[in-house]
Image: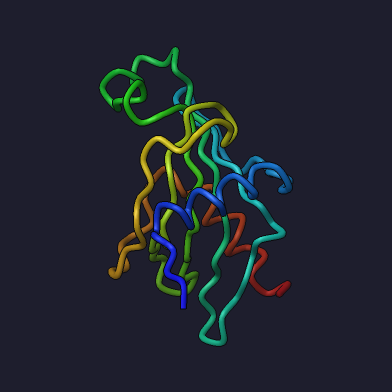
Length: 137
């Protein structure tokens, strides 16, 4: 059996994801715009919703230097799990990209997390959109 590294898998997923998805904007502020791919939405038997999210960053924002965009990249694609009942979030892994809207090479992949945590403020719009339409699955 052939083994594939996490970074290689993330690279394959992210490169194919940006080329075939339709990103729908769910929130925006002076630093970032968050999008979701409604076609990636999956709901488990226990009600957990998993969806692909893209965050596009504004390099001209005063927050850009402190956030380290030059090292990280201008966008990131992450697979996100949301527990709509308990208002919690878990990253299923993702990667930072060089360019806007998930384009360019992956600069920094990251693995899934084991722990659930409160939904971060930057995903408030994503949570609201995903969990408001939870019953439509």
